Length: 272
Image (cartoon, rainbow, N blue to C red; front, side, top):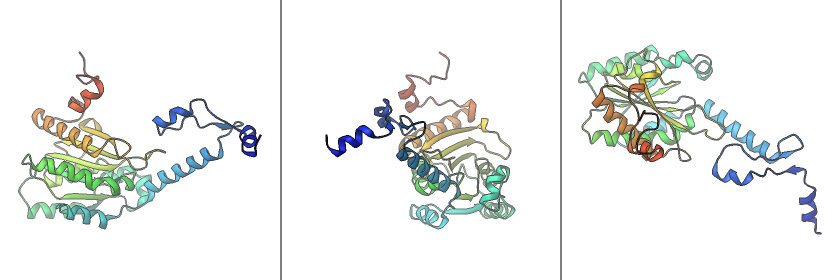
């Protein structure tokens, strides 16, 4: 018996028989064990993923590269800030991240005075809980959606970027711009296998004080999750239907082709 075979036979790691299933998921399954503890490799992988999730939350969004990419794609931007003064306050006071600070409010009011014509669509980008997701995916997602909306003849406001922003801050932005349709791109709370997940929230006739029941959500937009192309198709379907039905949120069920492919000929949530 050679040295390698002896080492393999005497290893303290007990392999999990489900290990072959790991090829199908990023979830932490079949980690194996050493006595009653995780093997060193699994522990180190956990610590690395945990560090990536923390970095996604605490790393500041790089505004200049984001605005330059949007400008290169042909989109004007407006930079705004929530009432949360810094990241610490943002994490401790979620309510402050849902409203704009007074400087941002005045900025939008002045823009509206100079551009009194109403717009149909406001697209808002908020850093949320993962600046990594916004940095990596927001420009591509915004371009994909806005190009489709432009083909429909809908007037679109400049893209607004809100730092220290949460989902509800988009309602105030859209209300101040006089927009009828709100698309919010936000970094989602990172998981240990998804630090770069982008969320999309859509609201028909947004205004300050709306609850999540008035919003439609498309989640997990990232290379390892839902593709930008698939998310764009789903969002456009929701927008078209919301205009037709004059609603969004729980009153607007996803019966798009993409949903039918997953759940059958119709949405499995709907009654027969």
